[in-house]
Image 1 (spheres, rainbow, N blue to C red):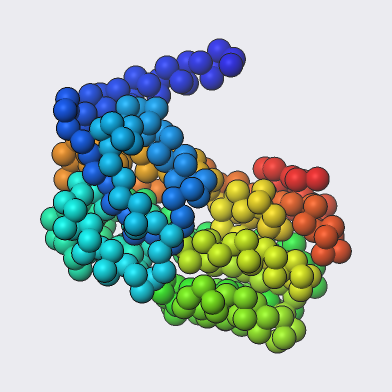
Image 2: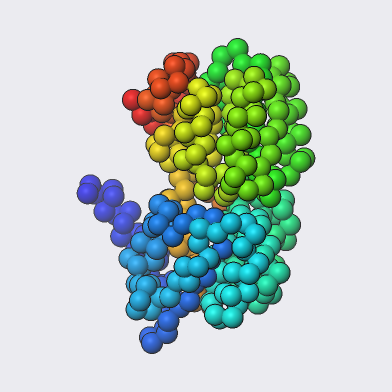
Length: 324
């Protein structure tokens, strides 16, 4: 560890300590519920719970995690939300709009910590600065970033004339897709939309996109699509279809190109910080919604080689990380 890293670590501990001291009450056990499509062993949850453990919130000692709310299908959210209310959890962690709405319908008092695409645009909170109600969390700038990813994908496939967007009907607003289509048309590119509602529809939607003779796929931001990323990687590779993804780690896991924040880092830093504040008694209505501030372009040249696609050198040079 160099001097700069050591000083940064000390600063982080100094900043976090007052929050921890206020949150932790001797003899108390904190109860955390969840509504999310990702399983309990997903890397971002490992990062979140690892950070909580480092800060003194340890499962089996002073922290109880209700694991039934992880790895869910969308239709399970309402019933599990009711279970969490009966279990008297202190906070409900939700990933995605559908999960948040299920929690909001189940309780108006238990704090909801959400990670969603656009919390204000979806009507989940009143504003970023003053959320109102019992919901706060992290809004991941999905609308802006989906457009940026589209621009990068067009650049990554020279001569592109037809492309597709894989969209989750549970979270993606039609007006957002219209804006993407208009932006693509301005670049002389036709954008077709392929909707999914549940996991079983993801691979058929990719097949339908390829059948329509598109030459690139923009996988839009969505908890459902993220939870099904391994199947998307595999199918896109099998069809030799260049694809763009929302989190930096997704290119490291096997996707071709990714642009966005680091999901694990966001959960470790923003998620843990807000959760500790809520455990300490902070009111969601007074706890501003946070947003990521660091974004990375990651290009996987191994994946490009596997589908016989050459990414322009200029784009590769701009990447924050290249996997060779």
